[in-house]
Length: 153
Image (cartoon, rainbow, N blue to C red; front, side, top):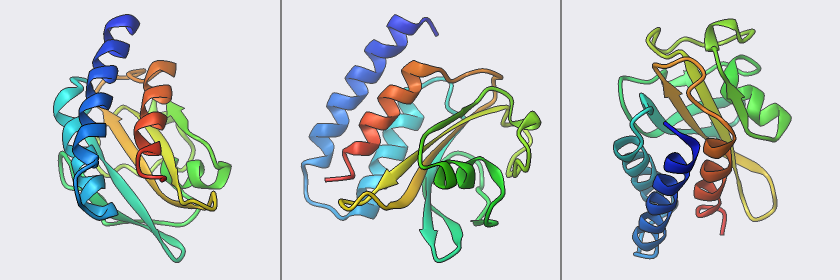
């Protein structure tokens, strides 16, 4: 998708999420709302969801798409790399990422955005996979970071 068109779609999705997340709900239900809206509004998203930090493990939270890995091993995969680095990661080809965890072999690229609590501690990550290689770029990173920030207040 062309960058300007993608950015405009994200802007519409973001406004929709702001409105939806103003309604009563807990953090888990808001994660579910974000995963559902993103998954159904962004054509290049194959798997969209959250992994929540539970002691030393990232455990599947609300998601949309094929069945997820229920728990991700510590210090393996893109999600854990984002936690360890403390920043978003865009992976154009997951099959060349060292230690990649293949929950579904149809995924070819990935973006992971950390979710922080009010003290700046990472508590979860938003993980999005695409069937397309090189599906994510700076536009996706910037907008998904804004979307995740809706949960950080």
